Amino acid sequence: MMSSSSKLVLYSYWQSSCAWRVRFALNIKGLAYEYRSVHLRKGEQFSPEFKKLNPLCFVPVLVDGDIVVSDSFAILLYLNEKYPQIALLPSDPQLRALNLQVSNIVSSSMQPLIMQSILKYIEEKFGPAERQLWVQHNIERGFQALEKLLKDFASTYATGEEVYMADVFLAPQISVAEMRFNIDMSKFPTLNRIYKSCKDLPEFQASVPERQPDAEL
Amino acid sequence: MEESKLKLYSSWRSSSSCRVRIALNLKGLKYEYKAVNLLKGEQFSPKFSKLSPLNYVPTLVDGDMVVAESFAILMYLEDKYPQHPLLPPDLKKRVINYQAASSVSSSIQPLQNLVEQKYIAEKVGSDEKLSWVKHHMEKGFAALEKLLKDHAARYATGDEVFLADLFLAPQIHDALTRFNVDMTQFPLLLRLNDAYNELPAFQDAMPEKQPDYLQS
Image 1 (tube, each protein chain N blue to C red):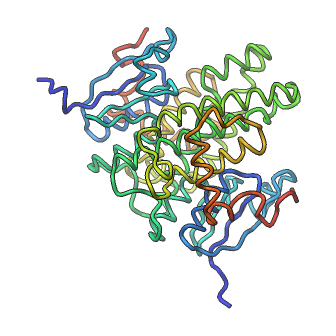
Image 2: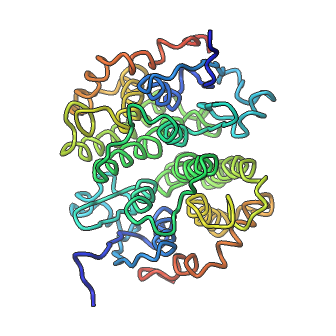
Image 3: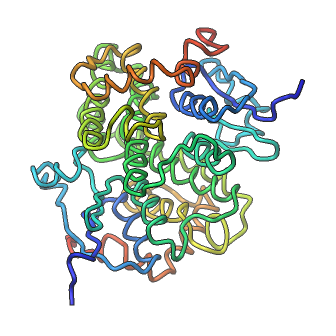
């Protein structure tokens, strides 16, 4: 039943929002994959084996035969080119650029500033109150920019009636903001609408942290 | 004289703007340089905000098309102006380029700016700031050395300049000129930097050559 040579392998951790993006994208594209857990809280990302796959010691990492891709943004672009069915980038230049912008805002201006290692540093240096202020400041700044960018689209998803890369990056980030950091999403009605639409998708539901094999509930 | 229809809103300081300047040079695209003084907060001016709701540099204007975010701009340029391609035809090599680019733009560059942010800037001494930046740059550079070692030739992913080089060059430049990173720890990146120094397209894009250099 399992043909290991042709199967995609995803190194993931249930709570990683970056890995979540890839899980969501794989589901949208209808691509089966083997889930391999890297327990971040136990430091498994620093094991010699994993370091060989990704010297930056981050999940997600995708292995496709002899191709190893780390970084969710690079993985998404790879998947889109290797498995073009159900495209994650629209062909219209303006919408294409918009999807790349949204994805980059999440992956460069938001998530890296609120990942666990950074928050640990902030908390150790400045205390827990500052940590929360820091998180709030960075998330709200990012969401304000995204809200501005997307507010003129009165569509089901971020940039139209289909799920694209922007949605793949947004939905996990919004979920984490709400659930982990108690951000009030009612301030961002466009983003909230997009998130609600994604939550209705079985592909999204199957990708949520709580439904992963390594979820600790 | 034909007015160039490409306009680039840029700051000499901005390494993400530098990436785009390199691309425009490589593709032989003339553009009007519109300086945005980041220290004075010009990116928040009503005029710029109307153009670019994100208040980001770089922002490219091409006729009716307005694109912000360096990666989005580079992909737009690649689609619209295919001369001197920024991506190799081979998917495996393309993926290395995407990883290197994303590694710089999400694992190195944002953390470099982090210490200048609210809540940290005034509370952390300049020595600690510097050591923070250096730590993250060095971590990122070490990973890039490993990523590229089986792929690099004259440039990051072969004998031609591609996307990875556009992200690496400004980052290495910043490491050397602003943060005194000892790049001899990263012989591959140092060698690449020497190669970039030979290319006018790269050199003309560097901060020191921009019209607003040191003016903001």
